[in-house]
Amino acid sequence: MARIVGVDLPTEKRVDIGLTTIYGIGRSNVVGVLKKARVDAAKRVKDLTSEEINRLQEAMERVATEGSLRQKINEDIRRMKTIGCYQGIRHAQNLPVRGQRTRSNARTKRGKRVTVGALKKKDLTKFGDGQKEKETKSNE
Image (cartoon, rainbow, N blue to C red; front, side, top):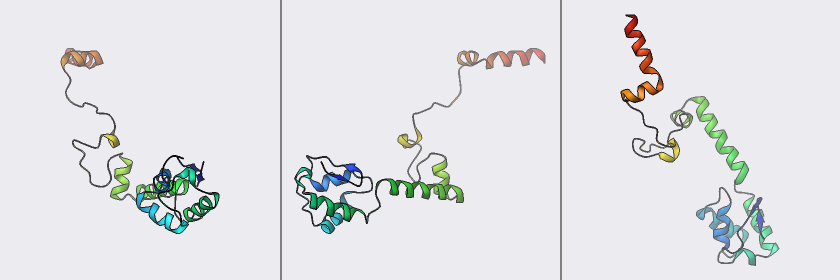
């Protein structure tokens, strides 16, 4: 089992696909990392030698991944919030940041739908607001 940058790679997958399980490494980054490490992309992770794993680890040290990348992203978001830029305000309000439509979409960012609107008289009495209205009318 190959362990690179603190992540266990899936043994049955190809090296180029297996490396994408590391946070911060995508399909485009993999090509450069494999060239630097001189490792064949078509090889399976289980077939890697210890020398190839060491070369991969050395090549990955130059790329921001896992904890350091997450920390950098969180610092960037915190900085945007403190200076009050548009993106920081959108992050603070838990809304999409990059100009996406929010009227009908953005459910993953905004959460479950909450219906907002007028209540029927039956529902108002359940919440106790109907009693307050009756008392104010009788006092007048």
